[in-house]
Length: 457
Image (cartoon, rainbow, N blue to C red):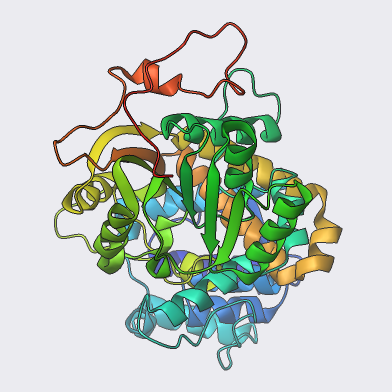
């Protein structure tokens, strides 16, 4: 009789009508699949049962997060994910939506018979505890958004410190030629945002979704602003307040546990939103854009830093990644950059610049994965093995998605024009990128035209 792996691979390939992109080793030690292909290990029969009940991305994710499926020690995780992504993007495979009906056909019955022979049939295994299953409230209600944000961000500040490094910046870095480390590249990104916003002493800055406070700290230290940072993550707010106090900047920075829809005290001279708009949702995006517009002073600037998906083909429906939605960013939603620009313009903004940073994010994610792997025992101790596996899988998969242009990341600079239509931006892009107050301008740098932007204070 054929060994377990051979029986299983033969049945799976019969169901999908194509060769598997991976080599498979089963719990009995047998192997089958293309020689030299990346190898995955089904550690037990439950791994196969998960795939039968949830064929595709979700079943694979559940098996990996639970530990029922492993990556062979001699196989690189990126190789596995690259092979799976290339397979999934194949047009013939994309059109194959596996489900119960497929299991009723001849090839499906063959797979079920194989699973029966291998002793793998049985009830659907319970999903890992890291999976979001019950969601209360209307989509993007304030209560439900708080729960979604808590699921992702309230997993332990020490855990995030291991992954992100000392800057605690959870968005893509800016890899300038001078950046020698992740910390250098994150500092360069923070400074790029401050320069695009044209910050200078006395201005009032709002950072929506402020994370652990890194941007407002940078802006207050180096650009002399008064800053307000808001987040709905209790753990982020607690640590951000602690960092502000330790920096001696409590008189210039206020950190609030507050939804962006609850901010009452505009106007602000500048607003930053970095890695937050992905949580807003398409139905609420115009609400988001209009509220930020109302909070911004005429002539003020908005810097919106946001992940984007590729546009859909005619007739194609947008499908959330079940793994990302259930394990990483519940209720998150990506839009094409063109849609983001349109919504900002509909809210009244004038979009002045769009900069794509796609390759920067791929490199940043690889750095985060390397940090996680280098501190794996500590990460498991802090967040649990399942959570650490979720973060490793999602960051590695996202690194490849950025590198292969399946998703992108863009900084959109927009202004609220004055009643007379003035943008108050310097005449050229080079000028507004060079904006910096005296205490932060590199030695020998020439003066720049800062425009006629009075502060609101």
